[in-house]
Structure formats: C-alpha cells, structure tokens
Image 1 (cartoon, helix red, strand yellow):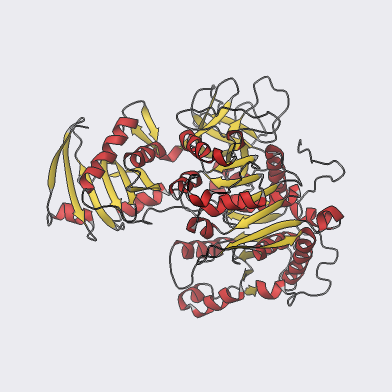
Image 2: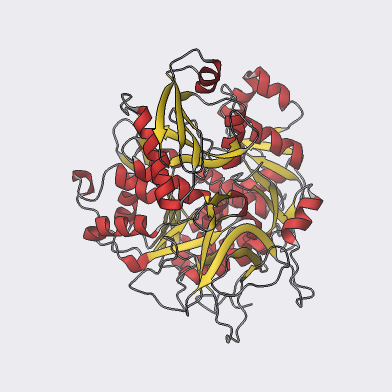
Length: 628
C-alpha cells in the first residue's frame, strides 16, 4: 500500500484516533491548533474564533471516551446529535477511541416536523443505538416535544455537556483499552439521498484511515497545511476532512454551513485571514458566491487568496465555465487556476475517490473539459506498472467489461477504502459492493451508479451524471438531467434560482405517457408580470441546447425543490412531489407536443395549485402556438 507519510519517523497508524496521542506528545504539535471554530455574528457580522490544540484535543477525547464507557460498552452504537462545533469534533474522535460505532445525524428541530425528523427516526430504526448523545438543551427540548419524545421513548440520552466536563467519567474506564481496531465498524454514515432514500453505509476504522491517507497524498497535505471548511460535520465529506486534518497533522478552520449560506463571503474571508492552503466546497459554492457579491465588491477588498494550493470541488457535475468565471473574478485577489482541484467521492468508498490533479503528476495551466465538464480523476495509462491505491474503471453495466476510452459507462471503484455494505440491506449491499469484472476473480468493485468517460492521452475521467437521471434527447438519444437544468437556468438567471431546478420525466397530465418536466424555484422578488414568457424561454432554451422537448414547466416558491444536506437536487423526490401535487405552485405551463409543433396551455397563478386549475377549467386558459 503506497501511502507515503510525509515523515518516515512517524509511521502511519492503523486507525485515525491513534494519531492524536502521537501529536500530543510532540513539543512541535502539542501547542499547535488542531481545529479552530469561526463564529460569524448574524447581527453584526463580527467574526470570532476559538481554537483547540492537539494536546487539548487528545485530553478532551480521552475524557469524553472515559465518560462514554461509564455508561456504554465497547461495540455499542451511539447516535451523535450534538450541535456543530469543536464539541462535536471531540465527540466524534472520542467515539472511535472508546470503540463505539458513531451514527452522526443532523439534530432536527423538535418543534418543526420535516425531513430531518424522518431521517432521525430512520436512523434509530435501522441502527438500533444504545444511546444518543446531544447537547443538554437539546435533550430537554426533545423531552418537551410530545411527538418526538414518544417516538424516541426507548432511547437512552446522554448530555455531551456533562461528558465534556468530566462528570460522567469513571476512573480507569479507559485502562488497557485501545479503541476501535482496523476491522471494527466505527461509523455508520448515510448516503446523500440524491437518488433515493438515504442508506446507512457501514465504515470500518481501517477503511477510513486508508481513505484519508490516500486523500492526504493526493492533495499533498502535511503539518504546514491549513484547511478551511464549512461543510456540515454530519456530511461524509465534512467528516472526512476532520479525519484528514488529524492524519496530516494540519490545522482546520471550521465554520457553520448556516453562517456560509447567510454570508457566503465568510468562506473567502476565512481563507484570507488564516492563509488557508486547502478548502473543500460543493461545486454550487462558486456561482453562489459570484451571485451574492463578486470580487469587485467593496466587501472583497483586502482578500488574499494566493495561499490556496487546493480549491477542492466536490458534488459532480463540475462545469468548466463556472470555474473559469470564478477564477477570472477572484484572480485579482491572488486565486490561481492551477489551485482548482475537481474531485470525486462517495460514501460507499468512505468519501474520497480521486482528484484530477495529484501532486505526483504536476499541475496544468489550462483546465481540460468534456461536454462542458471538468475531469474528476486522472487514471494511469495502460502501460503503468504501479497499481493505484484506489482503482477506477469505467465498465459496461450489463457485462461488467471495461469499455474503451471515449465510451461512456458506469464508474466502478475498488480499494481498501471500500465500505463494508449497507446496514441491514444484504441484497442492496451485494448489488452495490460486489461488482465482478470478467477475468478478475477475487476482486470486488463498488458499483457507483455514476456514469463516466475516460478521454485523451492523459486519461482524464469525467463523471457526467447518474444512471437514473438520464433522459431522452432528440440529438443523440440521451442526455443527463443536469444539462437540462443548466439550460433552464441559463434562460433566465435573474429570475430563477441556480441549483434549485429539477428536471425529470413524469406521466403527462392527460395520459400515462412520460413527458419531460422542469420544476424551477423563482428568485425572491422576481417580477410576476410575465410567467408565460419565462416558461416559454425555459422550454426553448432546453430544446436549443439539448434537443429535449419539455412538456411541463412549473414555477414554484423558494425552497420547494427537494435537496440533500450537501446541496444536491433530489430529482426522484421532486418527481414524487409533483405526482402527489404537493408543490406550492406559482405558475405552470403544460405543452402538447406534436412532432415539434403544438399547443401550449398556461394555467394557475397565486397560491392555487395549477394542476387543479388547469384540469378543472375554473381559470383562464391562454392558448399559444409553439414551434418547438
């Protein structure tokens, strides 16, 4: 296994929590900040920060682990519901040191039922935790919520406040105990739910350690690295960067995702203030920052982004034009194009799979592209003799045979980072984690469900979309849904919300035949004088760009399109919501397709569901000739 620690004097550890006492004993690291929590005041915009050193972190992890083992036993499963921050960081490492299996779940608001409630109840049902650890205030709030308290009545609650203060610790609880072994399940992390119900992925401590070592090598991280991350600590990528920080001996500056969404400029300010060398962000971050104030604004004055070596972009697809625009805008503040590191990952491989530019292969000035996208990996040539740590192959889904370069297929991944499977789902686990390739007896591959293509002499891998999101196109037979959504947004970027558009097929309103549907959130404050032309423009733009005929365009209120916690559009959930007529519709356009020409029926404005209005005949109907 080629993991190449940055210093052979400090060999790699089989599990991540064992790095902490190693750093804590070294004078050069003991007083060094391991994590910094940056707090942005919502009212004043003033920023404050709190740091924890490697020595303090190791002591806190020991204290928390001892407290946990005062109530629980090694091998128990614990639900982690603490608020984001340094306390949650300590708790996650303490679970590993105590030999517990952690299940991080976003704590839902007890007074507001919603998707987060459903996810919490799903996690309790599937993982059967021995206890839940949460802030004292949250434990009290749950107890006072009759609905949530009844659903969680059999769950033992532990206050992280008490554990952190050492109140629950038992002397000697950690004596002779080494925490999780490499083969022990230390984490159950849920998939994003972008293509279906989130599934519980079982991750061993050894697989996680391998994964972050591979990522450390790919991004060339070490003690001199400073990471800035506002990714949710419950999200697989956000959690991976906590582990990656400790394995690298680096410093990580953390911020709340809510603080970033409230003021996206905070991300760039943190990079500038802490001279960050690495930052991971979902690909939607770049257009969001550009829309909410570009590099020319007064608030951008003084930004210094020249320290960045890795601007890591996750959440495929990654559009080249968007990256080019961002680099052009913030190049004046020192951002270099060669720092852009498009990457690929998934929960089934712990998180990290690849990045397009590894430190061993050098950097390039120009960013190559394929069908408007940037690559997410650079694969070894067929003549390469060294086996990759993480093997990536594009195969024919039906035969399992590798396809030729230039041919689209399903991305398969094999590595020691592969997770163990889905908890309680043996058939789904076999389907996803036991991909077999002819002539490769004994090799198991994770079938990602992502479609990709390898092109060029450098053998760049482009992840072009999900298999379940392919739609029919008159141009070349098929197109991925994100291209339809991008074209729809491009037709009116000032009126619809970027990243909040869902494209999918659903039954037509007057037949069982499937038609292309586009659901788009309107910008707050968007004018309402001409929704007809807006829908027509979306339909026309999609046809011109992708040769896909849209049969239905629905304009909805902000926040209506279902998304994952990492910002991915949940197209399957969006389809279900449309079929169930649960959208807060502002306006809807229904199109009759007749070999490229037909009638367009417009109906519904205001709070009345447009479907009912259109089919019930109660409102006006405007017939417009369409030439698409």
